[in-house]
Length: 159
Ligand SMILES: [Zn+2]
Image (cartoon, helix red, strand yellow):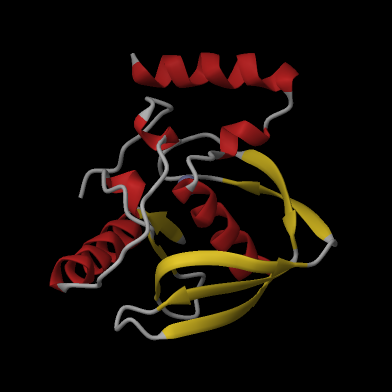
């Protein structure tokens, strides 16, 4: 699948909740995972492949996770700061401060409710992908004085 890159406006749109998980969603999950692995990513959200549905895939090394309508239901105050990349912004790394430990509630691909207690890399990856469903991107975490620099770099990548 093609990954939408750069801040073109589409990635700013909010994804809609999925009401019914059909073969179409299941196939999309598999296509998203294949795309993510081929780009050596650890997570991918449906809007990044042009689908405005609340679906994400994550694999931080412990196997693939397919989540429908994921919600962060609790997060600890302790946060850590780490550089993150995004398949939609190749070549760009941004330091993002995120909660170290979160709880996510979602449906799995068979429609069963799941509750995930996530720490460290898993917590970070889930927060990054859930951000995508809200139209929030890593470049939003840049301090204002770095924004001009990074946007300049993005424009150069585009041309
Ligand atoms: Zn991303």
